[in-house]
Image (cartoon, rainbow, N blue to C red; front, side, top):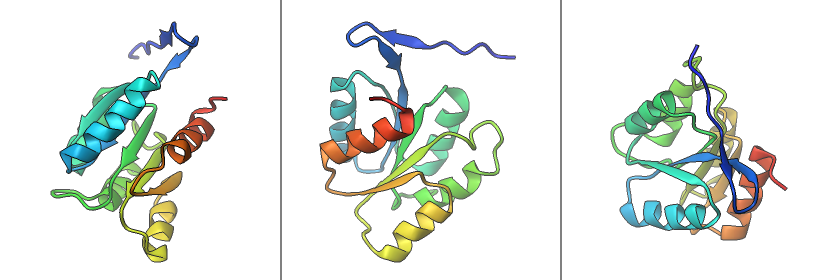
Length: 137
């Protein structure tokens, strides 16, 4: 069995969580990456759903921030595939999307997303949702 390593963040003595940001728009990725790195998270990125699934399988990801509208495999497709893959099915996901239609939000949650945040991102809302999921005070 592969050994898991946990990084300790010396700044605040919390576990260093690995966050995967998945979005096909580079400025969105950059914005989230800066917010997360400033909060002392280790950040991985992917530009589409297929890349996201590869990273989830390869790295010990703590949480995924997942856009819906992407090429190759969209966010809802990632949720479908993820729940079929034993090694990654329990990784929590926060959908981060410009879609604000109630049916899309509900579908995301039904497919296994833990939360849904609408773009433009409110940093406080993001940190609050992440804290709940990652059990950070």
